Length: 150
Image (cartoon, rainbow, N blue to C red):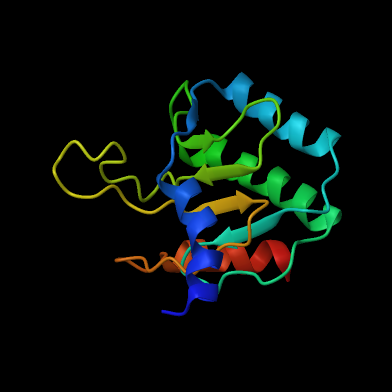
């Protein structure tokens, strides 16, 4: 691996494996979305794990649309009175957010001895690198992903 490739991967991998804050309540998730949308929204990458990582940031319109759709999906598919499947580096000035797919949680905490699953989506101000998923996204998630942007 070249030094340039290593330099590109290092900040993103530090975020992936770094300490993140769990968004435990739905109200906290609403606040996180509001924080993102109230700031400049033209510097975010949206990465759906299993697809090729984006090379450019998304438009503000695409980010707002993604937030609206992922919020609906999480609240519909994660049938709990708490969130607990979204993690961020900073609640008041986020630059990195991991969103786990409620239909592919496995043992997110890793307590089973198996490594936790990869998140379903990542919002990042760092350019993402390709994360190899052991299990490809389900067909229904691929269709959902394609539907919201086609």
